[in-house]
Length: 88
Image (cartoon, rainbow, N blue to C red; front, side, top):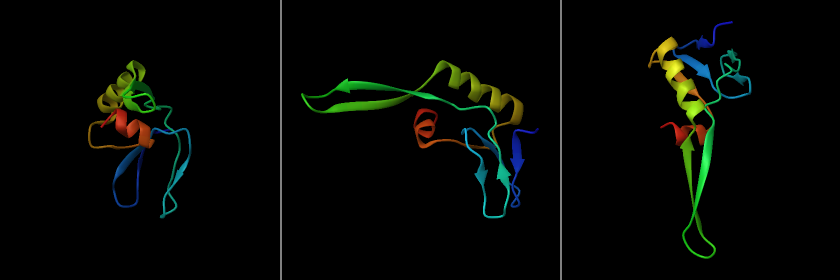
């Protein structure tokens, strides 16, 4: 199964979530197996306030590099909002 799917408008996407994604044109994009997981880093700013940073993981960095090597940089990566923060 090809991990990259071409949508009806010609855009190529890869699903980096664990869920099937269904588009308005009926195209179903199955999970690719890549997750681009992130980690949270907390820093206490004051007694009750914490700053949370979303950071990439080593495994996620390797996955992103593999995606770019196999499929190029033009493929659109569909992922979670947390992954988008870790891998801008």
